Length: 348
Image 1 (cartoon, rainbow, N blue to C red):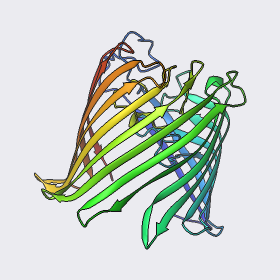
Image 2 (cartoon, rainbow, N blue to C red; image 1 turned 30 degrees about the horizontal axis):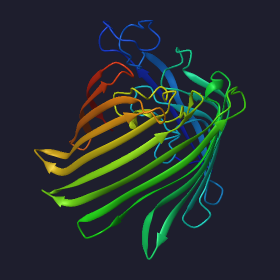
Image 3 (cartoon, one colour; image 1 turned 180 degrees about the horizontal axis):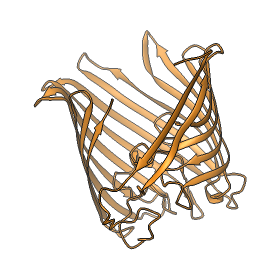
Image 4 (cartoon, one colour; image 1 turned 120 degrees about the vertical axis):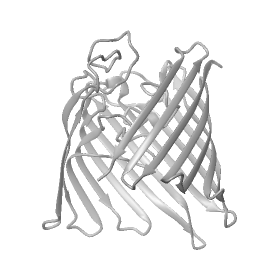
């Protein structure tokens, strides 16, 4: 409820292993020789926030809160992991200008998905996150969203990740016919060292994406996209995104999630997605297949390739079932990796 323009959220989370036979490395159990599955058992305060909406077209949120900015490439909640990533700070959002959303967040602590028991489970320091989003509307049609941003990270306990990043992004879709739709996106950012970081570098991030979506194909919708993403490196220091929802990018095997290789990363992805409603007794069925080819940004090094498959099904409007598979085949960069997940989610 709302009282005098104030609303509040108090949220806890508890993570438990089904079996005591934990033959995996959760980041805190000391089993470094086992595969990493970074979902340690923990009980934490996930969110504790107050939001005030008493100012015209403005929201002020204070406390421990969830942040998802744009497509989570730079700032996200890492929703795939069992322990959600949240932020302690003050956030201002304003929608006074037409088709425009302004936001600024001052963060003193990032509560990472690794849990409080992990030495790197939190980032502390002074972080500033500013973003401007504008809906591009021409000729009576919304062509997409343009964003400009500045992310300044001063991390006391991770100075090598203290960076300042300035960039711009545009992504959208446009109908070609009544059944076909074009998808497109582009992004560029420049990142340099900041505050406590002792290194001296200037790295670029570039992304380009094109796709097509066909509606009413066998009663469903088929989407195909190709994406090219490059994270540059200079002097052994690569472009970093420590606050991102990393699992969404560079393949689900998470080979490149923890850190960008010192010689940078060139990731070329092709993805197919099919969605159909009311099929086989299911409310919604989604099929996804993707292929990644990895190389270094400099040095012509082959990092290998990866295939991803996922099936999700919505059942009874409250249950989501998921089966997911990732197979990373190395060319000498890391070890081969195969992962398989089954999950059930109940919403109420």
